[in-house]
Image (cartoon, rainbow over all chains, first blue to last red; front, side, top):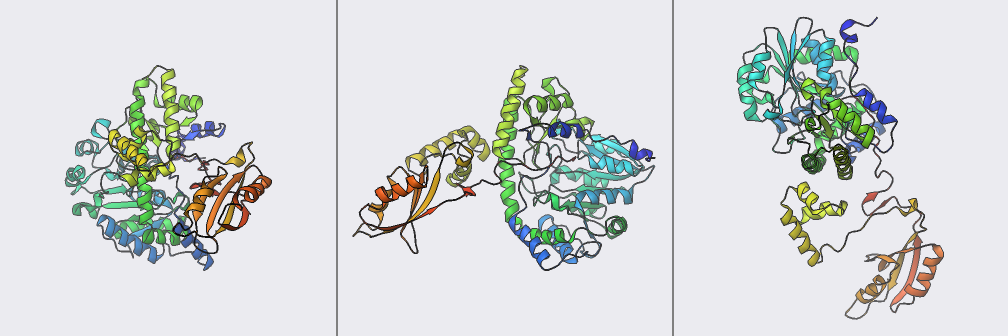
Length: 385
Length: 160
């Protein structure tokens, strides 16, 4: 009954951990990729106000024009990117919808999409649903999990239609600086393909601000920038994201969006307007907190003997668990069962994630310290130190 | 530096110097010296634990007592406030603007103990003109900690 390219996609490898989790008490979860902060107060107030005023109707398909104007302003001020609010910005149900729409507009059987791994699980899934062929590029810790021109050269073919550019990266926390991207930009400028740059973690960088690959003039037209409110403004449950790109692609994405979704939730859109207008201080506060936790967790992993590279973006640490002699799966399952600490096995994010595990540090310092203590005990019991 | 250390200690008083140094991305020795200095200068006066006694066996009643005081020549309210502060039942004492002079926080095992404390210890202090006792019925937030949603992580498991 189920189409083969959907039936063939395996259920998420993380699922079984969640089933285990539900049976346990006092688990410290470093598993979930979402802020522990509650949405900032003023953003919630804006949503209340919208409801009180009866703003409960649909918005236009592409999203309220006033929100798109705020997004345009934000993209200009924050990343130096100009988009026309009328036809180059689409408001979506989370950044995830934007990823799906873009892939559906650009890919079909016979096409190829390059996905650097380890990375967010949805790219591969959504790409596979289109019938396209996924070509993965393995990112290497020795290269700080960055994408290189050389790796792209090897992966690219006549049939490459899309390159996913997932930085700051989930799960590694790796980022691409301007100088890291220069060669890639030069290499891609004449290629007939689209770069989907997923910049959902763009606000969460710790050694200098985020630079979008779309800021290279030669790539602006062929890059679709995807972002959203979930991570930066702690608004995961509001489900609001957006895509910025050339008119043709945004128009095509809106065709699917208008029939499948119609429009993103109105109340969430009002909240998002406030986030862009007044949320900068809240973002700064949360980033400072993440940064403190980041230092604690990275230092902690290295101290207990799990070699951890310094993540410069997002809110994940990605320590190597190779010296335990266990696979990522064995490590995470035993750790959860014995010490009630949830980390996500690196191989869930692609086969090059094997030998690593992801820990979300969007959690209180007390939680992080307690988790590190438990992991330390877990390692000692096995004489791994 | 001082402010950065204090902002963290205010919320997490149980961190080791080493952990603090990592958090702040500073040298351990510098952080240690800074804390020693602040203790010496009376900036850091102690480390308390925020406890929700309602979840323990211990009976505990808290009251806020409005105290009106007759100020003394040259000393104002200081001597009376100092005397009140030295009582072991008193957990806080503040000079206030408005309708009364001192706000005094008191803890006792029950209403009666606090009533006796006010009658026998507080009201009889020289310079105290009157008292009005307000019992705390429930604590929602104390010492910067929100009791209702402390500790609880209600994020659901989701694939991403």
